[in-house]
Length: 109
Length: 124
Image 1 (cartoon, rainbow over the protein chains, first blue to last red):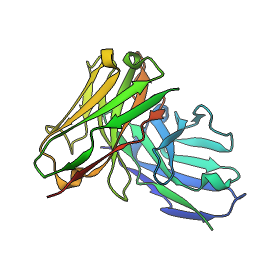
Image 2 (tube, rainbow over the protein chains, first blue to last red):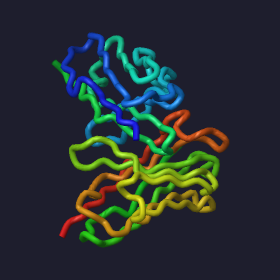
Image 3 (tube, helix red, strand yellow):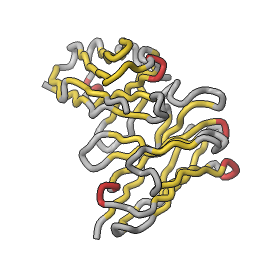
């Protein structure tokens, strides 16, 4: 089973700053099957990025994804107040299973 | 409007059973594979089960294999999760989430539509 480890656990930044979130896989992951989600308290997750770098419908272009192999990154270029939330990476692997990272909490500094 | 609405959650004793439902609307349900994903209180997301559009392919997480059964009724635009032999650690909010379209591999476009979740509490 592929394990996804996200870092940092908590990221404290101010609106307007740039956020860089990391997702590291225990073994190589196909970029085609790497996604990122945003979850706010009391809400369902929302798909942000699929295929490691493609933005989902309606997602602002300040969100971008990159990476390959075992290292993937979600970047928010200029934080808006509504971006403070928990972010999860997710992969679909050869064992016919999905796995999620443990999440990164992005909080207002 | 594309929408998923879960129901069927509640309080159940350890060892008991519960059946969750997910009603889909606003899209051609029979063309999409579906998932159940859960989130324990204060914890992260955990994938539970996947079913293809025609029910021909089904996967389970190891933590629920042999206890949970996923199914769907395309005529009723509904997804189900039959949960048996429930344990304390099954306590969570359970979400249904849309996966890929027929002919596309699982996970290729992420889980792009989610319900609001239904809460399952396993406790004596």
